[in-house]
Image (cartoon, rainbow, N blue to C red; front, side):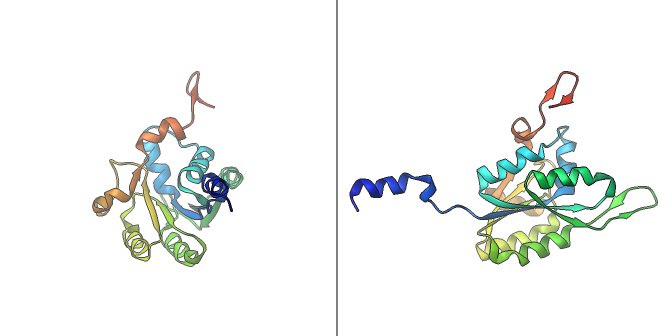
Length: 183
């Protein structure tokens, strides 16, 4: 091979190994934290962002299943998410409870051999031991926390491995048109 040919191969992005990272998303934590900041996440843009910025080939979104949101779930799947449903219970006060934590942890472990690194999206401290384990195994990419003002203090010592979403509203939020209508 000539010197010029080697240089071309190095500069060719297609010659690079494509990343095979997975995102494991605590949807309830993500949704509540973003809404508390008074913006709404555009899940289509978010999926593209995860792929482009972090090499996420699969994004698993853990959701408590509520039948009246079926059209939302269908759209999420169209956007490229693998939606993992957890059964829910309706409490006497009308609130719906569907704890996805154990399912998310289990899926991270079951899929362990299928991905290069894991990106965890949550601010919930219940996932601290999972993040620690992924770091020890060399399988941890980043912890993406939806709100820098509301997350578990357990994560503070992991600051270099944390990405906050607070400043992503212009990039990943719905654009408002006219009287606050989403575009």
